[in-house]
Amino acid sequence: QSALTQPASVSGSPGQSITISCTGTGSDIGSYNFVSWYQHHPGKAPKLIIYEVNKRPSGVSNRFSGSISGYTASLTISGLQSEDEADYYCCSYAGSTTSGGFGGGTKLTVL
Amino acid sequence: QLQLQESGPGLVKSSETLSLTCTVSGDSIATKGYFWGWIRQPPGKGLEWIGTIYYSGSTYYNPSLKSRVTLSVDTSTNHFSLRVSSVTAADTAVYYCARSRSKAWWELLYWGQGTLVTVSS
Image (cartoon, rainbow over all chains, first blue to last red; front, side):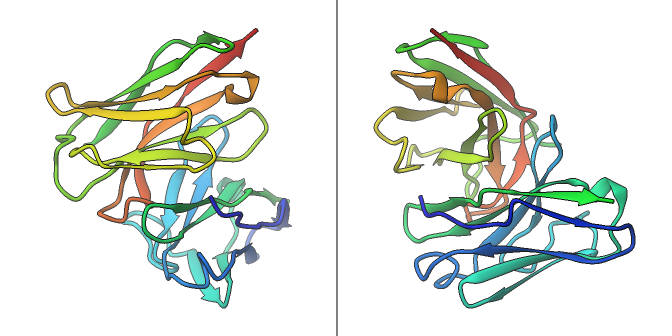
C-alpha cells in the first residue's frame, strides 16, 4: 500500500475556500487519474465526494472540486460551511491488484 | 436503497481470529460490476483499506495485512465476510464494509455504519 501524504490539518472561515493537498508518487497519482476523496464525520460512515480526480457522485455539492498536478492531487472546498468540518482522506489507484490506500487524513476546522 | 450492515463480536482476545460479516440489502451481492470492501479505522488514526472482493471470489488485499486476512462472499445469503487471524491490540478499530461505485473497485460509494472491535489481552 503506497503512502499518500496529506497535511494533518487545515482551517478556514465560513465562506472562504480551502485546499487540501495529497502527494503521492509516480506509482499512483503520477500514473493514474484515479484519485478519490472522502469526507468523514466522526461517528459516521465515510462519504465519497470526489472520484476520478474531479467528478462528484450524485448529490454531492458543487462546492467540492478536485484537481491534479504531477504527483499531487488537491481537494478544494469553496464557500466553506460549518458542516464541512470533518476529516478528509484522499485515495489513489496504484495499478492491477493494489489500491493506493488512503492518505493519512486532514482535519478541516471551520473557524 | 442499498444498505450494508456489519455484524460480529465486539470483543476478541489477543492471538485469536476476528470475524465480521457484512449483510447487504437492497441489491444482490452478485450484481456484476460492483466490488465489496473492508476498511478500518483504529482509535485516533486514519482510514486503512483492508481488502476487496468480487462476487466471483476474486480478491485484492492490502499487502501489509494480506498474510492475516481472508475475505469470502456468500451469494446465497447476500453477505460477505472478513477474517483477521492472530489479532493484537493494533487490530482494535472500527471496521466498515463498503461497495464500490462501479467496476472501479477502489472507489467506495456505499458504506455501512461501522462496528467497533476491541482486542483484549
